[in-house]
Structures are given as structure tokens and as C-alpha cells.
Length: 243
Image 1 (cartoon, rainbow, N blue to C red):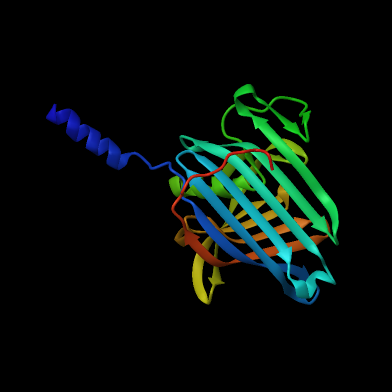
Image 2: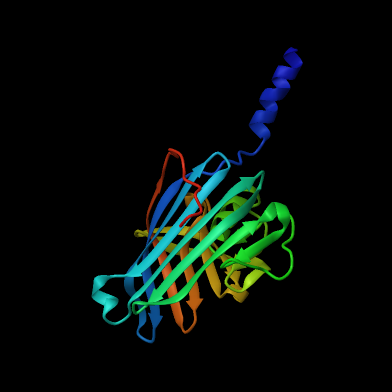
């Protein structure tokens, strides 16, 4: 009996902890111009996690000073769960506005157990693959969790759901890069996904979450840089898909 008790303790110590941790993060929002990077607003990310389930949200917008020149806002919500070491998104909604008009608005419902998904109520052509599946927002979380488990891995591959469908994408490590966050230099791991026009800098100090995000959106190039980060205790989450 004593032998089994000791074995149980050892397994507890060596088994990875797969639980997600809630957090909030604030970013400065920049746009690249011929004059360099101009700070035009802010972005907020929040992960509300309890047990295996999560609600992940982001919102970005230009400040009042810039709205007359470039009025932009984007909100995202991703709902899903973590199945052992894989994230499985079940719901994703995007609302993007430029100059007061809707540029992008869609919602994706994913039924992973049945291997299909819907886009604005219409079923996608073709089936999705079994296993992990993320969206354009929760892929940041997936990279963070996978980097914790495999910090030396150089290519991460995910099924990613977005407005163009569900497709496997490679996220490739492009080396190390030292950047300044709040006047403190930290070493980051640079990740590239050319097909999504996306570049990320992940930092071990922040649980391998992105501290810098560069995204090409049509003719506009946005940069987001972390300014504040805080871990939270989950108090329970709402998983109602009625957004």
C-alpha cells in the first residue's frame, strides 16, 4: 500500500499541469506608416478560465485623438476547452469596424465531436480533422501552452478557423529577439505565420504569451506591444454562446 502511495506522489510531481490560468493584458496599438510606428490606440486581452473551459476575449480601438483620421475597432471572443494538451475551440465571433461601418462581422460554431463547423449559420464545405482546433484568437493561447511543454520545438501546426475557412497553418520559430517592455529588455521567441500575415514575440516571463503582435490587415499594418499584465483567479465563467 505504501509503495502505491509513493508512486501516486511521484506521478503527481512529474505529470504536467494542464490547467489554464486566467489573466488580463493591455497593449498599446500602433500603425506602421512611412513616418514610422504611430501610437493610435490600445488593445485589451482577457482569458477567463475555469477547469478545462475558457472564454478568451480581445478588443482594440483607436483613441479619440485619432478617430477623426482613422476610426477603427475590433472585438473578438473565443470559447472552448482544453482537452489534455490540446485546445478545442467551439465558438468564435469577430466584429470589426472602420470609419463607423462594419468591415468584418462573422461567427463560427465548431462541433468538433461531429467534425464540422458553421460560418454565419452555413455549414463549411468539408469536414474538420479530429484533435485540436483553434481560431484566430485562441491560437495565441495554444502557442503559449505548447511552448511551455516544448520550448525547443521549431514548428507548431494547428487547424485554424477564420473567415476564410478551417485550414492547417504552420507557426515557425524565427529565432530570438530582445525587445523592451516597459523599459525592461527581455528575450523573446519570434514566431512567424506568413499565410496569416502574422508575427508574434513570445516571452517566457509572461508564460510564453505574446508581448508583441504584428498583423497585416489589408493595406494596414498593426503592431501591438504589451504594457500591463496581471494573472487573475477564476471566479467562474459564462459559456453562453448568445453574443
